[in-house]
Image: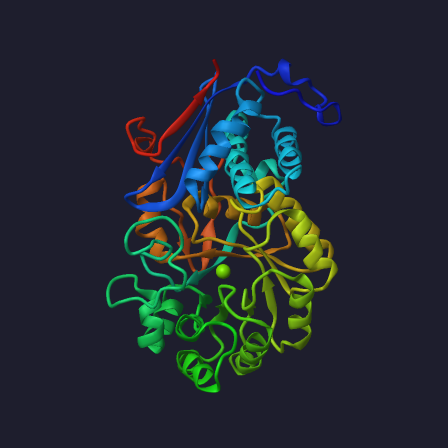
Length: 421
Ligand SMILES: [Mg+2]
C-alpha cells in the first residue's frame, strides 16, 4: 500500500477511485553502451508501460527509486502526477532534496506523463496545452559518439569536454582542426547554431583559477576561423562546464565579445547566484544558467537576482517535465527565454521537445547529432526527425518513443524491479 497522502495534496478525485494502479517498477543500467544512464519503466494493472530515465550515479538513483520512492508509487494511481511529485519532493526536502532525489523524481515524472499520454492517446505536449509551435528549433553541440562516456566504460563524466579524434560524427575534433569545413557542413545540413567547449582545454591543462592571455588566444582561433568562413550565419554558444573562477570567467567573457556568442554557459560554477549576477553585470555577452541548477527554487533565485539572460533546464535532472514546465513559465514572466539541455539521454531529449512544444517562452533544444545517430539510435524505437535546424513534434501518445525492451532483462547486472505484493 502507498504511504498516506497528506490531505492538502489529495486530488479532487480520491486516489483509490482510479481504474489504473501502478503494479511494477523496473530499472536498468546500460553498462555496455551508456553506463551513467538509468532507464526505468512503470507498469500499470491496465497494461500501460511508462518510460523514464536519468543520467549520473545510476545505482544511487535506482536505490532511491526502489527502496524509498517505490513505497509511495506501488498500488497508487499513476495519473495523480502532481500528487506524487509533491509528496516525494516534500519527503526529500526534509533532508535537503538535491541531486539523487530530484533525478529519481525526474525519471518517475517522465514515466507517469508517458502513461498519461498513452491513456489519453495524446502526445504529452498536448496535455500541457500545446502545441505552441509546429516544430522545435535545435542546435548541435559539437560532441562525438563517445561524449559523456569514460574511456574505460565506468560511470561518471570524463571531466572535460572531448577534443576528439578523426572519424565519423567527430564534431569536436573537426571544430578544433577543420572549423571552416565543419561550419559550412553544419549550414548545409540546416543547422543555424552550434555549441562548443573551446575553453575546456586550458582548464584541463592549467585548472580554472586563472587563464592566461595565450590560452585565450589559442581558444579563440577556431572561433575566429568559423566567423571568417561563414560570418554570422551560425549562432555560437560556449560551454565552460563550470571550470573557471570569477576573474578568469570575466577575462573569457571579455575576449568572446568579438565572436558575438548567443550565450556563454556555465563558465563559472553555480555555487553562488550572487557571484553569477556579478559575472553577468561585468560580461559583455549574454549568460545562460544552468543545467547545474535543480528545481524551481534554484531558478527563482537566478531570475530574482537577474543573474542570467537565458535559463537552461535539464528535464531529467531538475525535476521532470512537471517541474521544468513550471520553471519555463516562471522564466517567461521575467521575459527570460528557456532552453532545454541534452547530451544526457534520448528521453531527456524527448521530454525537452515536449516542453518546447508547450511553452511559448522556450527558444532552443540542445541536441548532439553524434549521440542521436549512434547511442540514442540503439536505445529507442523511433528516431528524432531533425531537418533545417528543427525537430519535428512527436506524433505518438506519451513521450512518443519507447526504450528497447531488451534492456529490462532480470539477468542484466544492475537490473532491479519492485512489485505490488
Ligand atoms: Mg552545458
